[in-house]
Length: 293
Length: 280
Image 1 (spheres, rainbow over the protein chains, first blue to last red):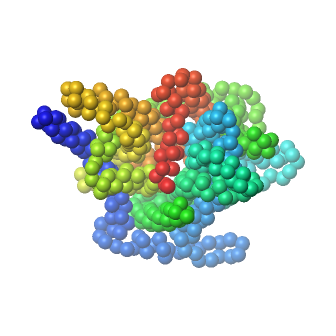
Image 2 (image 1 turned 90 degrees about the horizontal axis):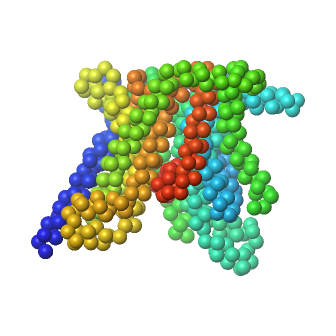
Image 3 (image 1 turned 60 degrees about the vertical axis):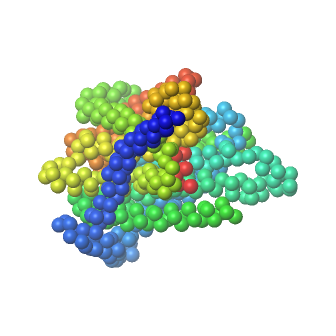
């Protein structure tokens, strides 16, 4: 008896030893760095407390010249709104394209499902830099897309360096992250529910709207987060496909890092983090409310 | 499948693979042109293999990915064992929350946060450059750990609790019971975690970019630097090689039927699933 007790106590000692390295590591390299973001965001170069960095994000202005003339705009608020706009557009396109695809795959035979999912995942294994670069090749003014238009006798279109090109890049890079979670929810869906709905007089559209869509919402929500978060914080895609003309919030952070303005870079990162946390909390709540209904 | 479904799926596949196919074709183009295919040639492949900087980056990437995968798998598996046995609900929630942070946060924030800390600590010790291989390894281990833990934890929860107890009743020491009984039970999860950590580390650009410093270049960073200025078909040759290596790995893992090979194929999907589990 005493022997067994001692063994159990030794067991709990071992588990504490197991957890110790990770606890220290997580504290040092997950929690402390986030504190450093806040610390840098609210200090100046001499590490004295200041609100200037955060204030600069909300108040800095610059002049923009376009067809309508020269205007003064809030530099970083404009950048943030642009990031949000492009990320939301890309996410919506991914959802519209991905939802039917996920549904079609989930209704196919087991073998086809396996092959399809493997095919969708192959581009994910390629580095996103290469994937983005491929689109740069295609969309360039002298690129393949315009070459094909020329063969058809059409005039070339200028795409690279437009917001549209950035959206294409985002959609292409993050599209699999939309399909996979929706597919995995749909694949687990109980077929009997769909049959029951049909037996009770639902037409195909009714089944989709009243049964499949509500049941697939958890997958839709995670798909949205998995596309939205990388899109909103990207900087490579906008540099390559936007020709650096469309500064996104990720570009702003990266630019300040390259310019060695670490405190302002931290402030932008801090604000982005807070906004994303609020968004996720709101989404989580609405998801929970739907789940409750 | 209905015809319309077939057409739709075909279009999706075209969208996914056309850009990659174009890279493959133009890697064999002799001219530097991106729209006209002039002449079949292996010129750009020869150029690539003469590029010692890129080859060095490949070696660096592999060294980093292997070290990061091994460290995060050992530490993550141990952590999962510890977390699984936590009795306090409060501690458990805290551990789960902290573990989720690197998966939810955008890469750019993880990268910036680690960089700020490294720079600050480096300055404390008066170092001129504080970013090097070590800081990069720390960063990679940090973002790999949650994925390893998330693979191992469910296996521990599925395991029959009485198995290690039976082993101890039969005279095993707890340590021996752990290695003889628990480890074999959770091995599939550990291997998936290892493979995931390896692929995540291989593929990472953003976090590496902020924590690398000047001396140590991985392949994604090299690609970034190569694509910074001009377009060079050497990049296409590199992309083609990477594509066929990936394809070969997938085929091998499909052909061999063993459980651990299956996990290679599933690693990326598991990553997506892990993120999905966190975000819902």
